[in-house]
Length: 413
Image (cartoon, rainbow, N blue to C red; front, side):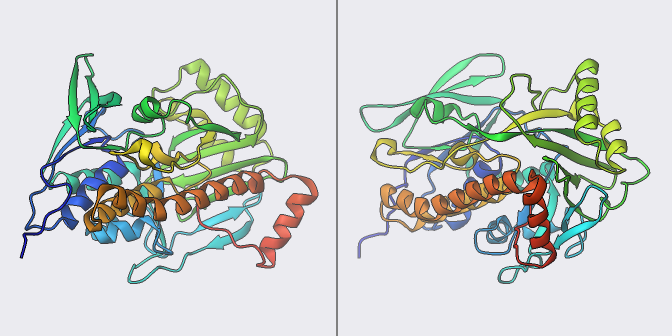
């Protein structure tokens, strides 16, 4: 009987990005790999110095069906570690919608899938990344922190050449048989192979930041997270990061601007003052503690960003040896509330598909079969949500009536 082999044995894999998707892929491939076979050589490059970016933000992890991020975390074997860092006690914190006076419009608690202990939870992004990085670090892979994959190109021999740059600007060239692009919304790898495949404006702007309350979060945000609706075209999302910090994001539909403030880097005193003034004006209808939260915004964690997203990528012959996962594949806006779940499942599903397949093309095709519909559904949901939370007039009244009578089902943010 001929010894069992695998098409990735003896091959080199480069993973561009060690964020949620990239770390999940590495950890999943190592967990699922047949131990009787030689594990492929894996090199992971990430531009950060192992300090999670946007560490002040929190994320929703869902587990209402097989496509939820909690399912992937359970499959990885890290669910218990994740649950220890839940912001709200399990099955207590709920996603809610409130009117401008904080009267509850709807309260959602998702039913858990399979043996999961909860259908949804919130976790600080820094905690999720740390746990995933630690799990991926157990794999037979080499991690290069502070190095970014800047360009890539296909070679005549079928391999892929990747140029890597350090923080000091020094560059080096590496070759691989399989390149996993997990380098985020502004993917340099996507720019190399698909220069016209860029994010598009989704029609709304969100401004906000993180506010600190050393004596405890204002009610009702110490127990729940969710969205305030004005009925006048303005909405505001709130979620705790921990027991003393809350993130807020005020939004409205408008033409795309030029004066955005990204989530990284912080604002000057003048920029923060201008942001607060605009937020107070737009959100004047919202009752306290809205104003108190806006006033307490930390300049280092304030932002004004456009809602941007893109369609998922269909891998074909032209992308042989290259796979996009997470935001590099299908970037979503904050209104999707599902980016982390997509990244987690992308990482697991790709690793599982590659381990099970008889060839690289078959494995990538199997990954697309599960990833594409999931990403497309999330994209549609986010566009629907942008429309719903910014409704005005009679449309808003009809929407509220639908909520009140239970005829409208909303998925958790």
